[in-house]
Amino acid sequence: DAGVIQSPRHEVTEMGQEVTLRCKPISGHDYLFWYRQTMMRGLELLIYFNNNVPIDDSGMPEDRFSAKMPNASFSTLKIQPSEPRDSAVYFCASSRVGGVEQFFGPGTRLTVL
Amino acid sequence: AQSVTQPDIHITVSEGASLELRCNYSYGATPYLFWYVQSPGQGLQLLLKYFSGDTLVQGIKGFEAEFKRSQSSFNLRKPSVHWSDAAEYFCAVVALPNDYKLSFGAGTTVTVRA
Image (spheres, chains in turn yellow, purple):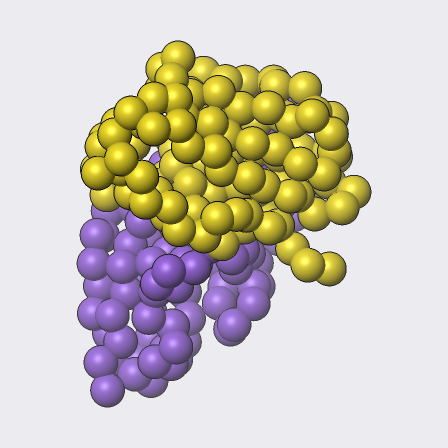
């Protein structure tokens, strides 16, 4: 199995630009999670989906952030407009129904200048 | 709400020495506990998990952890550390059956000296 795939691995953009991060979960996994990792706040959950439906988005920092899961094999996290404080590593993870173990992707390192 | 505390920010250990990383959790019911490892520039890899049953759980890479309900702890151990164990280690808890959100501790960075 290819594992969780994230793209791009690195993104450098300028303040005010739109950023789209992509995730392909492991085939057959019904839960998908988006996390953000920063030095100041550590690992924090942004949003998670079950069967493509958002279940809890209480961790999404503000309206500039949005996430979608149009089908079982693809999800996006969009930031519009981006700000320097959004600079972080964004991880996607997936898990099977009833299986709590989450498998993490390699992450996308976002730098907003 | 559930939470996790990792008291040690950074630990330095000699290669071949034993390692113990501390984790304390806060959760009203029986917790589901995890240890993840993150090597520099990499994603998180699950080392081991505890759901129920035997309180001493074995994981990958020679790691084990012991669940102690009386102390609200889930400490990670390895008898003999290898240089490749240098990484950041995260303890996490999930509040099943209510939700699947992982709450992570702040992490412990392990440095291995020759």
